[in-house]
Length: 165
Image 1: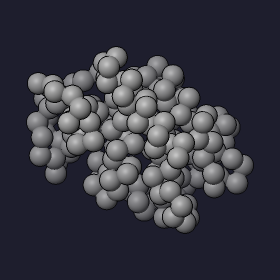
Image 2: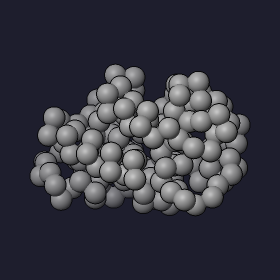
Image 3: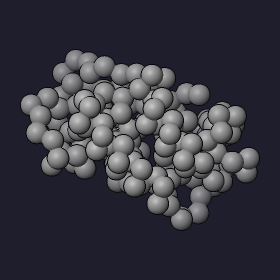
Image 4: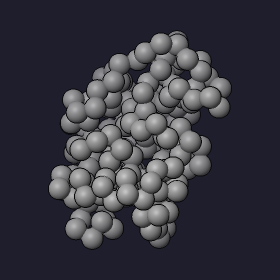
């Protein structure tokens, strides 16, 4: 698996009932159609998407995110940069946690100064500017990568609500 695979699967979930084609996913995520196909093949082997590549195995993905993500794709906050808020600093969670440190994805169009968190894929900030649901899912996912225990408990609950419904 590669970090991009998580982004592709979460984008499919963020779309809900909306129809999509692989070329649509490629455009929305600003990646090539072949990267989408390769990602789906890896996800099928991992048991995270069905063999038609149309349906995400939601429980399996949630289990992987909650229990394996921080070990497979670990991240530590980096240098101070300007970027797009993520993890506990994202708008979805900022009301729930008071913190003097902000975490951001480095982004030229960002407005918040904070410690850099490397996104799961380089185009994540651009894709999240276009899709608020994807932004919420990826910010919650980043909590699982870099968050503290209390933040992780809330993020796991919120991810479960968003992924399984």
